[in-house]
Image (cartoon, rainbow over all chains, first blue to last red; front, side, top):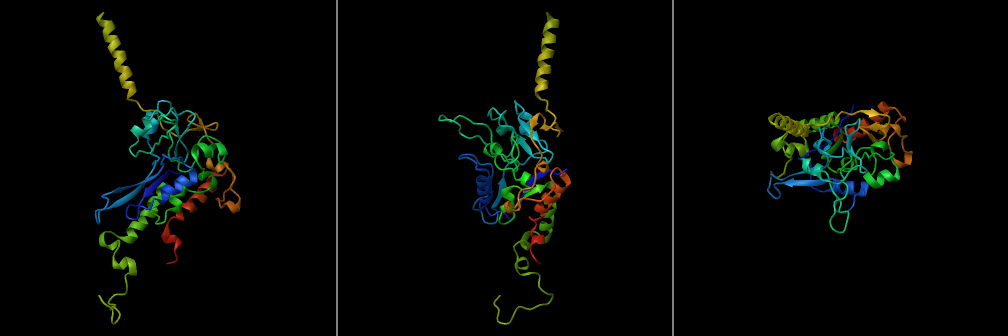
Length: 208
Length: 84
């Protein structure tokens, strides 16, 4: 059984916000709701700045599911945490429980009323019929039912954001991390121009 | 009177403890529903037409859908996409 997860490689994320845009575009997410966002720590500190793309992490033991008073959440066979907007009362408990701030609440009225919760669905839609207009309007596109992965991960330009079965993407990340090494090897000469041949000399006239 | 107070306290304590409980989050799919919420499963849909660039699997066959998704996942691995 697959367990769908996201994995963001902080060494690669360049804070382009392409994943955020892809999510908004693919799911036609309304203004004020960000299912995905890019978080940067140590912003502006040379060598210490890291960015990471965050959305619902589809927890294996999801706290939002545990605290929901109307029990509107459910988990699919693929480990995707989804919710039923017909049951949601917009109380906001899930927002307080979620360590990632994933649940979002659209401004539903002129006085700032909280609407029904909206969050990343791993592009898996919701309880409505798959790939139907009703499902798209409430939950966004159901890419898993189209044989695709979430738009944010698939279009990530640096492939920092990986999406899919936890074991598979962890293996991709592992191979990547072992190939690039660590420390100065990550962005060093060898990474850029290859390891070269033992004992090779720089070309004549080249400046060091 | 004291017994009534003790029983009352015990009931209140039991209610408080019940508030700390967590419901089971086990995936159960019965009669088209996950934990009471209706939803269909991804592999129960037919693949999209080729011009919509969807995946290719056999409708209703979970293994073929998972193989399709796995291919898609591996396409994120640049070491397997770029000619070395």
